[in-house]
Length: 128
Image 1 (cartoon, helix red, strand yellow):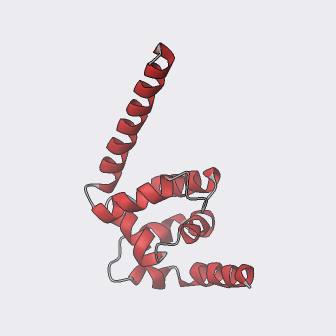
Image 2 (cartoon, helix red, strand yellow):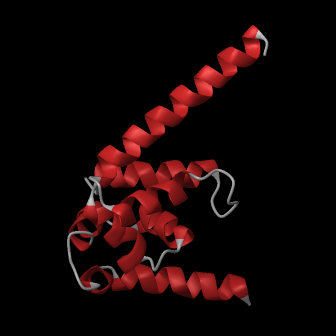
Image 3 (tube, one colour):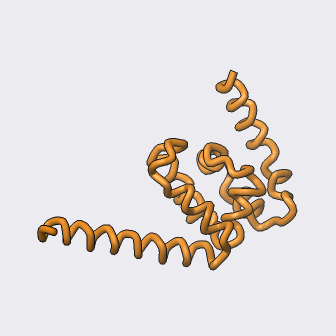
């Protein structure tokens, strides 16, 4: 292995180590939240473009959405739909999204009903 290849391998390992630590920190050990973060950050899936991924992460930072609240956002509010998460990141009020992500039993969907209805109306139009 050349010196360049060794340097690239070390850089890749360091990047992976940083990502693993960031995911562990943000998820607070919640496996569902960690899975959501991995999906959001996955550049290979072609569901979201880079700017949408960054938008979701920035919205979560602004709204202080971390640990269990990440899973609530991903699963309970957006039904594991990354495009829904991106839409809410762009269109939902920060305070409402933050509050909604703290609720259990899908209560956050009720808080965000109007913006979710807008998202589903748009996504229904584009799927026709």
